[in-house]
View 1 (cartoon, one colour):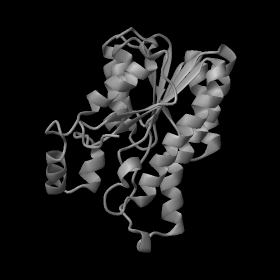
View 2: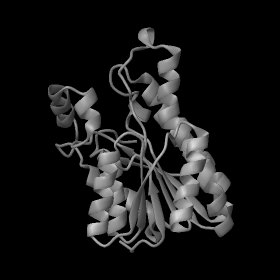
View 3: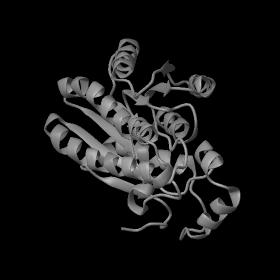
Length: 252
């Protein structure tokens, strides 16, 4: 894969998929801004690992459901690194499994905010700098839940992730004339993350893994490799697409 140049901002970069994306982008040559909301210790560990490998990196805090925090985050990253060339909108959360008849207004909006609104806020804040420089790549994080409705009590999460796919297509159309590519990845069953540790019982996870054509769950690094491809010139004629990373669990 072609080496990366410039600055990558990875939201939710302190753990799981975000951590893997930050590490992989740094290993491919990008300078990395690691955003976190709660996992400060995790973000600092990622930054330390990147620096130990010779990569310039720094952590940044912010609540991405608040437009003011997003504006401040982007300003801080820009002041530190000079520009943002790659944006990975990884931050997101199921929060809690809630079936429809038990779902409050507050829960629905919270899930939408952390998964969809945060992605919109980040794209809107980073977009002007990319438009001015007529270059940049944005990679959004969806989920297999966008296609199959998710597991029990994940209706709001599935809806938010489906909306991320649609937003990706809309922004790809809008930003292509400015030399900016916008794509999306949609991971399936991925192991070694806190997500399933919090929301999926071990037996249920094992049963789900049996339904994967390749016979196993994926790894965060396998998702991060696809993100790095989308961030690189190797995908220069690819925009508005969603790449499924699910081992054949859901083929379209």
